[in-house]
Amino acid sequence: SGLVQLQKLSCRWNELDILDVTGSKKLTYLDCQGDQIQDLKFNGLKDLVHLDCRGVGPSVRCGTFLILDLEEYPNLTYLDCGYRSVGELKLNSLSKLEYLYCNHNALDNLDFDLLTNLKVFNCDYNSFYDLAILEMKNLQSLSCQRNKLTSLDASNLQFLTDLNCDANSLNYLLLKNGKGIKNLSFDYNYDLAYICTDESEIEKVVKLPRKSFSINVNSYCTFTPGGSYYTVEGKSRVD
Image (tube, rainbow, N blue to C red):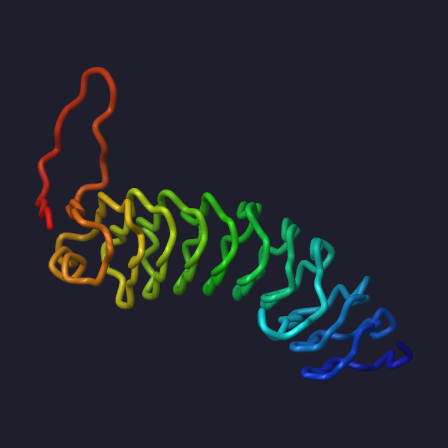
């Protein structure tokens, strides 16, 4: 790449299989969505803010990135790497990241420690067993359909307005954030037995579609511990 002054590049929906932009050190925006890229070279672009390398979808052949290491791009605020068969995603230095779309990949683990500024997170159709999201205080939208989650704790995420956790293996769901979640779906979790939510949200949650037979919905997010303990009464509904 000899375009040394280039700051923005959009080459989406082409038939590129190799893209090398390492010479464009001023590049801040790169969009190669839908391309068949097998070899994407963008080393050393310290100012990169927006990266969209999303594939097309499962029915269309597209390039794959088995390992996507983005730790040398600390200024990234937007990343979409969906539909690329990514098995390992390295994001340890991305404390500025606000939008993360890594859906339809092969991920089962992700280090969330520094992803505290995320606003939108989509990890649908992966193999996550756990999502440690409690430190994502700015999170507004979470979609984690079709993973292997057995529990999800979204309590105290006061800005969360959209949550879709359909088709996991959830046993319990903690949603109490003091404000409620405007758009909520937890359907096709056949073993879901317990949901904790704000008292004002209980009626709404009880009426939502679900495929589990009996769910205890209440307003206190505690479980019975071993040994001596005290019971805290709360409003409870079994449906």
